[in-house]
Length: 336
Image 1 (spheres, one colour):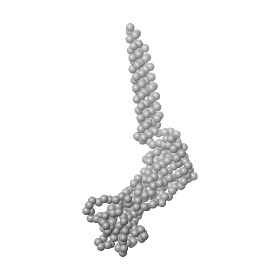
Image 2 (cartoon, rainbow, N blue to C red):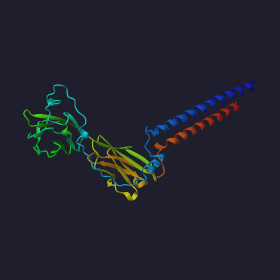
Image 3 (cartoon, one colour):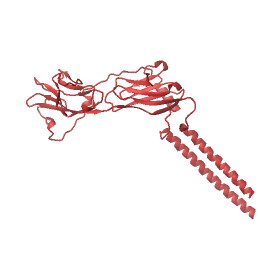
Image 4 (tube, one colour):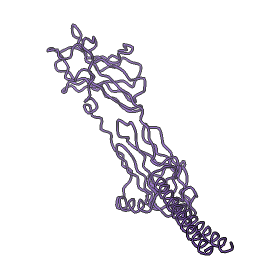
């Protein structure tokens, strides 16, 4: 009777040990998988280019071999002036809107947005002028900027672009500064005077490199850096890329490719080695630069990047612990 009770106890103990082992294995593998997934989304791991990204980069850009494109900016005199400010009724500054004898074609209260360091074109198109004179006034301090085509400001950044057959008297500001923001008046010297108002908004554009501040890749893999322009109101004439202090836009002998458009620039290096490690800087025209530090690894991968290895090791550790626990328990039962 005692021997049968001992066997029963041993069976129950083995079942409990088995259940314990299964729960440990499921928990360890579940945590490892979640951590690995978290690494892909940037939840604390270091960014690294995967094999699939290398293939995508090679196939998407391998056939496109071209030098840096120096795009000419197209400063449309109407595209940046599509929005309008709606002032409350009775505003003394804009009391000519909708008047039958309005002498302006440009919509009153037009808003123009420009970035610091760029160019701003404040539109002023007249319908009927005769011998009257057109002038521009900065309303924040009532400074007379221009009268006709002549500049009356000591600041040479302000000048008038007059096209006679179009009857336009656009005020151009190059380069734009943060203090230029505000209301401007295009005035026709009639009796009484007739005015049209333009509001200038000034933004500060900036550049950022995706994956900054650090990027880890393996030696022999391809490298693609994307420099994205934020808050830019016009396409830059150029974007220069630097490795440390050396400009590398034209290193075509290594297969290096640079793409530029109005919102971003890509740097593509088909093959890398450890000498390609270091700081990479994106320098767009009239925009502060952005920098990323690229680490090209020879063979060993940092421990912080070994999500998959950690998960596998954790699961193996759980299996060995459970097996050892079962063996020790059986030995203790046999000895008792």
